[in-house]
Image (tube, rainbow, N blue to C red; front, side):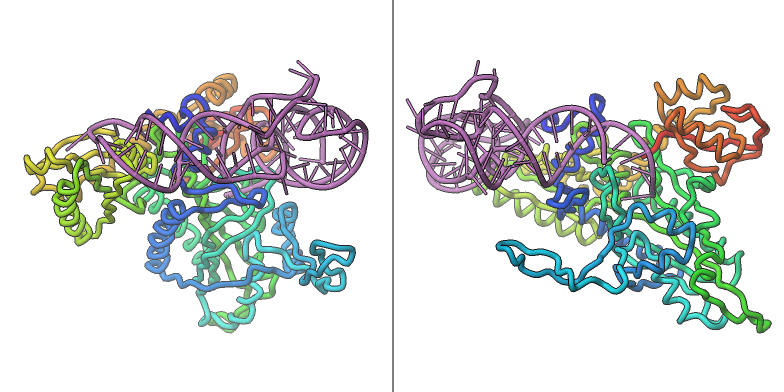
Length: 491
RNA sequence: CGGGAUGUAGCGCAGUCCGGUUAGCGCAUCUGGUUUGGGACCAGAGGGUCGCAGGUUCGAAUCCUGCCAUCCCGACCA
């Protein structure tokens, strides 16, 4: 089986690349470090978008759009911010091309140099806060709860399809508040939304936590994160939410008059998830037969495949298939009936497995005679034959069951690969041989964190929000520690 | 930016060391036929600036020089 995919156990990253390409989600483009998201991959992103967008709206947010280009000077306003992003910015310096005077080809017209160079946004805090300055005068203008769906560019050295590309799609929320408490509440609320989405739609269990100073977003006072565990034992940061304090308000001079008539700087948050989520989806659930998609995010939830020899057979099968399709669609289930006659059923079975379609129905002459239908589920690769008359209800509950099962499987995997470690040699050994999440004590200093990273390539993924106080000794230095933090090697 | 590798049909590759007919194979595509309950088969057909630019030679995918691009491994990162 699956002879077209690299074996997951043999070479995980090759398996991942193969899968993205073979399932027709994305491909490499002519531009180094940039990918083409193909219709099937984009359809998954659209599902992600539409669900998240609903959740944002439900929490009071509205969408807007800000420019792709940011004047270079905006970046230098906030010191940490510029330091964090300077190394990976694409810069626009000219606005015109012309024909090469010496012959063929096109060159940049040197006379068309921009007065001020423009940075292609790696994130939009600066351009947005420059606008917010004009929007905010009084506490009555607050809060501002805006989200934008956009592309951003971060010039990466090493790229991987969906996980890290130079240009990627994401959403970025940018909110402005009258008080610190309210902004912190927003920051926490949104990491909660992300965790909810990850677990209930993507079927990926996540650990909510706070980043260390070192791993914090450039310009934030606090960064909240959701961390997921992939099947190869590496962690993936799946979403972040930042409490920005008054840093950007000060940088862009955004003050407001509060109820008592005093002037104060506005409090800010920002939060985002990207097309990286699709990478997470792939790496959390898929197997050697291909993609495994949770029903709630699968572009096609059910595929129906006819098995026939003659035109007459196809006709009578199609009648049944189209009726079932209509019934399922009436229940809000997305169905594809694949009656192409240029591929064998076997090919189709394999192909839809590769693409991760949760439920496959097959109808053949035998079924027509017996009033039955074959139902196969992608998550367990099992098949059963059931009565045709019961099919719609069966599929409906099966989709729910698959969604739950995929999550439980991922949760079980995470539990089996989460360890509490107290000795250094054991720490190193676990990282090298087991991978996974490691809860260990840390003395709280950046020096120790960096030393551990240097020695083991593992990082502190977060200080979990639900971690209990527990006296202990730092895994590296032996100094006292008040609680465990989450370590892992990460993407 | 350092180390390694590769560029030949849409994709995957052989041929390059040791220059010599008309550049070949698998997959895919197209045509016709037989098939169809787990990646079908037969027959035929189309498809190439051999990464680019120079050079050596009677003759270059093959040798030489320069350039370009991509991939892998490191430092940076959602």
